[in-house]
Image (tube, rainbow, N blue to C red; front, side, top):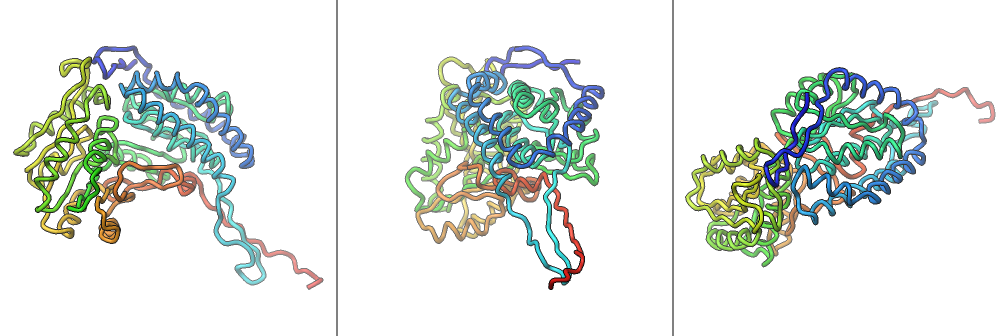
Length: 452
């Protein structure tokens, strides 16, 4: 069986890819199992040097990675170039981080005994990544897993297998056969991988799919990143660049980012100003010039359905740059919705498109309640010149990552992870290494020293 690949910029077929089934999954997992002793047997310095070589290969072939990313996602060249640079940086970061990680207390903790803790890899990790950031989400999962000494079988989304296939080829060259493999296919392929003889599953995707992964994994370790619906609280004294900053973040990758701002919440006295300024800022963001199309027909239909059932009384729509047309490909313009109820589908569901909603609150505490009123709790932002007020609101927001006067600012050094319906686990930072490691405590009662 094969999956037909579609170019989201045109809506036309661009090729096919085989769907991996039982035999391919068993073969890949067996190869990862066979490669595990050699890979985990390297001292951290040895893995570090090999991962740095992989990072160098990514940089050397950045143009090829860019072409593959754009073929599957339709992203502008500037977006793919920046993301590929981040991917190389992630592998370099974890190459060094594994050499510097700290351990729990060790030494003489029990009278007459010596103890220490070893961090050991989990084993073979099954990684399932989404279509919104095909290469970067793979790096978020694979880089710390590999640095920690695990081998990885990674399944890309069925619509975007291209760049992960190239990464696996370069990994075979830099890391060795079987250490990192790509397993293309559809949703059934993903289920087969989760059900296979893997020791851990790292999944990034939708909430329902994540619940299915967790049920299938049973007692095995899982790491789940299941999306977001990020609020942005804007106080009346927000900086002047607030509106352009929110519009840029909301339309980056056509809004197909779990951490993108989705729900702007402002105070009642500032509401009309916020609507006016946001509408102006979103109008300046053109599909086809500033951001790409939605990824696939299913997401396009879902986006259109949420707009159709929204009870918003006002809608402000930007345009599509010359070239792409509304009836060609999966393009949708930037859009702002205002005057909508708190339980509107465009508010309570993760829309995952170039869309912002605006809500009003009577005071900052009411704004905070609105921010925390949805099940997802991944990311948020607060916009104000009053640092004390901003930090107070940031403290009250239930989210794994909160920005103040900015949004979508991330670095390999800073952890990223969800709460509630947004999943469990940590991506990025040295903390992510422990997602893919198990501590082993060793305690010894040494022979009595006759000289003491």
